[in-house]
Image 1 (tube, rainbow, N blue to C red):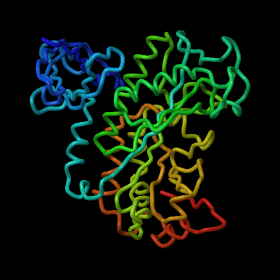
Image 2 (image 1 turned 30 degrees about the horizontal axis):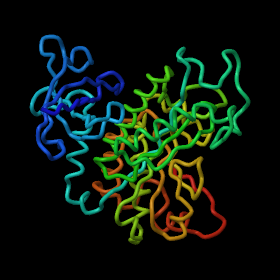
Image 3 (image 1 turned 90 degrees about the horizontal axis):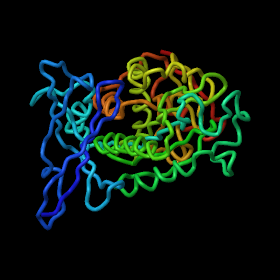
Length: 373
């Protein structure tokens, strides 16, 4: 009887750490195995900070299925939700809330799409020295590393390329990769994907990155500010659109900006632990305590792409989220404040829809207008 090795993957209880374990499955059917064919399983939640020793069993419920690019031969990666019992999501299972959001009629109608830009930094095994950095002191200042080429600029390219290829082999939607502003820092882009798929694929892509780091004996960091000082931090920018935005429905982009602005303080709380170290108003970030927007402006909370301005339709980029976000929590919250909640009324700040429309879509003299809370 044919054997399939399934790697069950889930989010643990320690700062959204990833866990996994393997299981041998017997599959004698001619059709490929599907997610509903994967049996549920369990694990010791007392060892992952998700249960106590007296009631330690946490259920693994398979939700997404991918090819296993490491084992091959029909083996699979199985992303799971975790439950303390049949109805109670375990600690850090934010996918359960995303499902509820995704199933709302108004969300189904608007078909929100996401693209996430995941930045990360590669370190030597000491977890202190980024790849390409001297053991003491610093490399040349930032400038040549972003999208750079050459041995001394694109440090870690083989690792980044292997991750790119292996993610594609697994069936993930990876739009591309590039070297980032700080030496040893890279980025890959997942999407465009639906509300449910974007979180699933981002977590699997991180799992694959961790597995590759094992092979190269390097440490991968998703810390928002891995090196203090005059160096760029790491973000996970959220590119977002709804059907209304993509088709140019009047004021749809402005209303989305309304929702993100009125929810700024609440969203910042879930936009990544330690994000205050990154969002200083420097190094291509906005200030943590302020909401702002602008066309082609990477120092704003929300960047309006030039093509979106010209066509008055398309997507926007939320540049606030840090590299260590839970994508389920963040994307569901963005949908909540831009689709579910009604921010058609005048916002708390003094700019009206017509004023935002003017600021966003003026064709010349593009100027950042700061929105005060």
